[in-house]
Length: 159
Image (tube, rainbow, N blue to C red; front, side, top):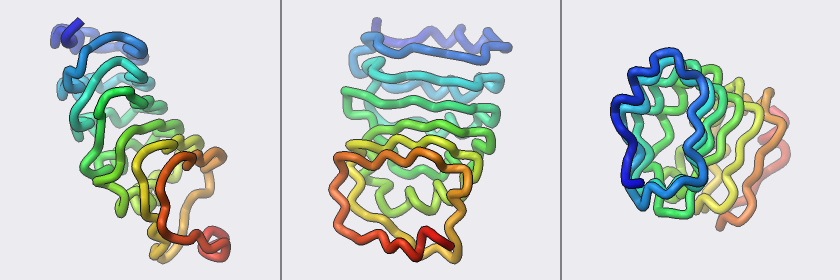
């Protein structure tokens, strides 16, 4: 398999798209997935995609779960597109080394987020210079296998 047929967008009522564990052989995630407005669950886990995560996924305003873990070089330059996903409550991502300074701010603007898996994402920085931290819905925060070079102060998380 080398890509996804754009005719997939004709499935206007599709709510769950699971392409996990396929062999897209390093093809980029198609931008047109961002026009599938009814999607609630998108699973591209180990599907063989590479390159940048398209910001068009931020158009999926009904998205509840987003799974992007990859064995290829899938990365995000920034995460601000996630702030347009008000229903998102589960997320797993990939290489975020270029977005390492943004991720806490973006997550802070996603109050419905319940589970966040950022293990082995290339994160090295935790910025807690927020006026207040709004992780009230967050139940799972998995930050294993990153390379943090900053300290998390407990008092910052209690605000």
